[in-house]
Length: 108
Image (cartoon, rainbow, N blue to C red; front, side, top):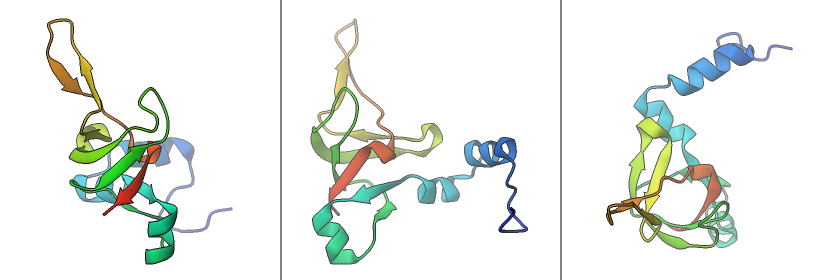
């Protein structure tokens, strides 16, 4: 059943709206959950992620690695974190993009 008249409930249209969202809406969509201490302090479950937030990666190859957010790459739906890097074949180190849903904010 349709809840809101202005928003489509069709999966295809919902995906199109998500991936074609403008930057100011992507900021809201790119939210991360708060740690248990911050959750009790602010009485909110998640907030949009920002540069200089301290986060801990909870999933994937870099699990349980923490660091400061260096860049929020809205165009690619990823964030870059200090010390979460990969070495290229030519020896250069590049940051690895992590999706905000896979991290927990530990310090705002």
